[in-house]
Amino acid sequence: MYSSSDLRKGLKIVIDSEPYIITDFEFSKPGKGQALYRCKLKNMLTGYTMDRTYRSGDKFEPANLNEVRMQYLYQDGDGFHFMNMATYEQIDMTEGQVGDAKNFLKENMEVAILFFNETPISIDLPNFVELEVVDAPPGIKGDTATGATKPVTLDTGYTIQVPLFIEEGDILKIDTRTGQYVERKKR
Amino acid sequence: MWRGRKDSLCLEIRAMIVETIRAFLKDRGYLEVFTPLLTIAPAPEPHIEHFKADDHYLISSPELNIKRLIADTGIKKAFQISPVFRKSERGKFHNPEFTMLEWYEVGRDYVDLMDQCEGLINYILSQIKDSSIPFTPAVMPPISCRRLSIKDAFSVASGWIPKSPVDEARFDKDLVEKIEPRLNEWGTGVFLYDWPKERASLARVKRDEQGDLVAERVEFYLNGIEVANGFSELIDPVEQRKRFLRDNTMGYPLPEEFLSSLARLPECAGMAIGIERLHMAIAGEDNIDNVLTFPFETA
Image (cartoon, rainbow over all chains, first blue to last red; front, side, top):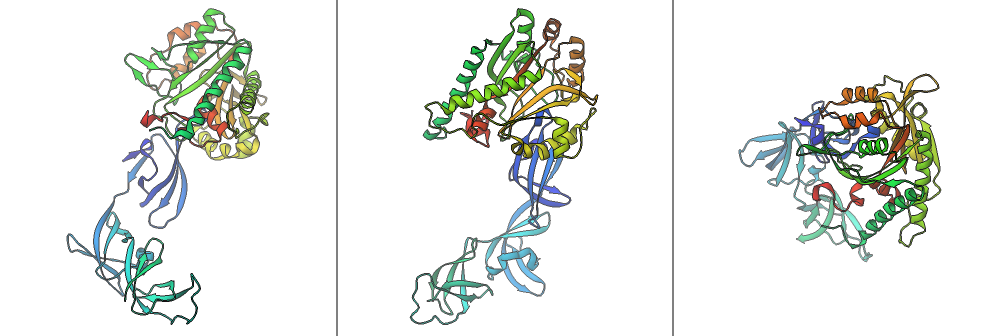
């Protein structure tokens, strides 16, 4: 268990059976009073944020979180399937659990999955992935205005704005943190 | 590592604050005193933990020893500027070692302290403003000051009126969550006075207009930051011993030397200003580390 004096920014604790991360922390001792620990907390499952004030003597359960290297296998009606690369054990995640990561998941891709107890709660993707363009409208001839873009669809189903010269079949480098096009790798 | 060349400005501001305090108090006849930082018996106040150093303790305030001096020497006006130490207090507004100004004057009470404090703050600000230091204070003299009783502040900001015996957990929580965020709206300087009597370890207690027991104590907030605390001093050794016994949850040795001098202490009032907090308020800083040379972890 953690005590109030362990509280600090970045600490992960359990409140009402859910994991929270402390995003802001302030020690306070108003007017010769007792020590108060003011926290901004973010629910790691829902993203919901809240303010809580704790006192000396309060106790906190550490959130049991660990990251596991996994390989993405495939998606089907049951969700997204991954395999633990050490134990070959398989898990599935729902579309909600996978979140925006679904835009960048390619079969056989290695990712880090964060577990809270036995529940997978988020996916840490490589910063850059290479995805294939499966549908692209033709570039409009003569339109060479700098910065002009068009939408294309990638093999994950993700639609992205790219420069006009991109064609179907191109392999593109994508920044998974911003979701944006970086460069064309090859045809 | 030192934060960088440009921050040497904060050293100049700090030096200027301390110099102007000395000048202000010396001009008004206060004697600067130098009481010890190591003591055999610290003040057993609630919620204050002392560092132990062999068979002594580092002081959390020079209060007891200054009062002994006044009681036993007949000095009427005294002040001390020195480091003080409070274990386990660390945050954006706390460093376990900080610097305290304390001044005491015989024949005064906590209402006089508000006038003295306002005068001192305005003097410091105007001296800095007119100095050659290339710096504009975040607060300008003369500051607009508001004086509010704790009861009035709570009734406006938190919708209840703390009366003794007060629910201290609720009181503290509302103080930080509801009162402190309103301070800037009330004034650049805010005095909160007449605290519930539970919040008086060394202060005189009286009945307020509604007949409730309150401590003759005042806290001063500058630019939203708690910078000073003062009170009409309790001079009754029997009552003082009772309070020490009530509050001594840490089991410190009782300050017997102080208690025996207290019988000779004339009516007086004293106020303490945290110099780093004052520096923060003047410079508009929101983290004490920005006004320390070296924070606790790297000192």
